[in-house]
Each structure stands twice: as structure tokens, then as C-alpha cells.
Image 1: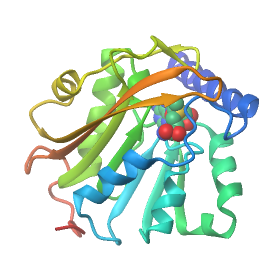
Image 2: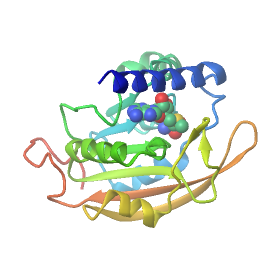
Image 3: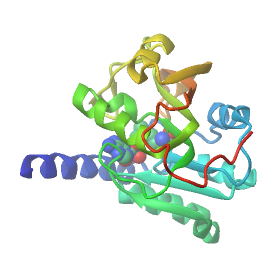
Length: 227
Ligand SMILES: C[S@@+](CC[C@H](N)C(=O)[O-])C[C@H]1O[C@@H](n2cnc3c(N)ncnc32)[C@H](O)[C@@H]1O
């Protein structure tokens, strides 16, 4: 238990330090426009009142573009308080329209289900199979029946490390295998992201829909804010 606490704490410190070193727009994964994430979210056809969570959203500008597009129910979860502070500072008054959660995505218990779970560059840091299993359990407990999963990871041609940490590199096939039969692949995109120091990183984006009956929260009410 103490070991678990220590490793989580050092992980939080790792991310806080990375953000503090680079600043919110200086970190390797920064995007001015999260274009593909936004397009894939639009593709799902969810309504503007749908519950969206950006898991490991950090200081990402995705939340800004979702608010700009009129989405009313956006949550950002991240391990790093520093990243959340940066995002809130950038948004100013609009930060009050967002739910902010400082937590570990592999252990957090959500009180409400969500219609859409978005993760860019978080799942690929889970190099331990038990952590991936825990993440998928939390996902299944949180996503409403037939909810949407958009996940982006390093692709096979990307470097083996991100932010000085080893990462898993996926194809759409291996990512589909990881999430299992309960998730149906709907759409795949690829992008070469350039870090601020000019290092190319191959990202793949997969949009899944969770099959009815595959989640663990089917009993929850108030579902479906989409078509
Ligand atoms: C590479 S950054 C990506 C940030 C954001 N998704 C983006 O695309 O700009 C990874 C983010 O995940 C967060 N993170 C790492 N492990 C996490 C975990 N187990 N639970 C929640 N957040 C985590 C980090 O603090 C960091 O903000």
C-alpha cells in the first residue's frame, strides 16, 4: 500500500515537474489545435449536453475547443495539479464551466457515467498489464452503455519514450485487442505530431463504441445524450 502511494506520488511529481519545466505550451505533446480529437468527437454525433471526460487532459486545449463548440458538460481529469492550474489560468472565467478532477485514471471511482471518454497520450504510459487492466475496469464502470471511447497513443514508428518514460506503441489492431470484444472500432486516424524541439512522433487515434451490455454501469440512469 505504501509502495503504491509512493509510486503514485512520484508519478504526480514527474508530471508536475514536466509541466513546470516546459510551461503549458512547451511540453512535447502540446497542440495548438487538437484537430483530430475534435473531429472524432464530432463524428460520434453526441449532443452538446453529452457528458465528456478528457482523461489525462492536463493542460490540453481540447477543453477550450469543446467549450467553443458549445459542449456544456466537460470534465478534465489529471494526475498533475500543475497541469490543471495551467488549464484553468488559460480559460479564465470559463474554467468555472468545467469539472476538474485531480486523480489517477487507473483507480478513480466516478460518481456519474459519461457518454464519451477521450484519452490522448495517457494509456500508452501504462506499460504494466495490471495497470492497463485497472484502467479498462474504470473505463467500463464509467462509460454508459453504447458510450464512445476515443483513444490516441504512440504508433509503431514513434519513439520508445515520451516525456522520458517508456511507452507502449500500438496499431489500431493491437489497441482493439487491448480493449477487447466489448469495444467496436469505428474509425482510425494517424498523425505525425512535431514536438516543440522538432521531433516527429507518430500518433494513432481510434474511435470505439462500447457494445451494449459490455460495461459495468448498465444499471445507472440518465443515459444517452446522443443519437
Ligand atoms: C503526454 S501528457 C498528454 C496530455 C493531454 N492529453 C494532451 O494531449 O495534451 C500525459 C498526461 O497524462 C497525465 N497522466 C499520466 N498518468 C496519469 C494517470 N494515471 N491518471 C491521470 N492522468 C495521468 C499527465 O499528468 C499528463 O497531463
